[in-house]
Length: 218
Image (tube, rainbow, N blue to C red; front, side):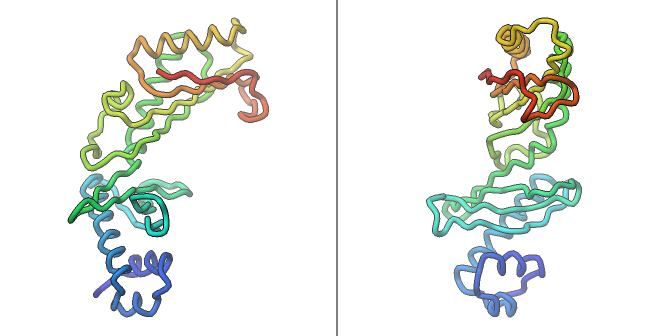
C-alpha cells in the first residue's frame, strides 16, 4: 500500500508498528486508521474547497469511552499554534465527520455585528471574543451564514466574552449593565452564552484587574 510521507508521520505517531508503516504492509488496525484519515482529509477538501489542509495527528477512540476519534489538522491559510479538530465516528460503511473550522469563517462578521450592537447602546467595549462549542458536519461549509449562527437558527453553541472598560462607565450598577446588554442582544435575536467581564481600565489585565464578571444565557 502506498502512503504519503505525511500519512506515515501521522500513523507513526499513534502506532508502534513503524516497520510495517514504512513498508506499506499495514496491520489491520493501522489500515483502518489510514482509511479513516483519508476520509477526514476528503471531507475537509470537499467542505472547504478554498483551503488547503494537512492532518497532523489523531487521538483514536480505541481504549477510551468516546465513540469517535479526534483528528488534528492545520490550514495553510491560517497561522495559529494549536491544531483544529475534526471528530470522526463510524456509521456503518462510512464515517460521520464534524469539525469546528467553520468558526474561522464567521468569527469576524459575528464579532463586528456584536460590536455594532453594543456601541449603539453606548457601552465602552474593550474586546469581544467569539467561540463555538459545537462541531458541525458537511452540511455547513464555506457558505455558512453568520446571521443564522448568531440568531441560533444554526446551533453552533455560541459563546461570547464581552470586555467593558469600567473607567468609561458612568453607571456603576453592574447588574443594570448586565440587563442592558441582555436586552439589546435579545432585541437583535442574538442567541448563545454571554460572559461579561468589566475591567478597571483600557490596559487592565484580563485576569487580575476585573471589577465584575457574570454570565447571561440568551
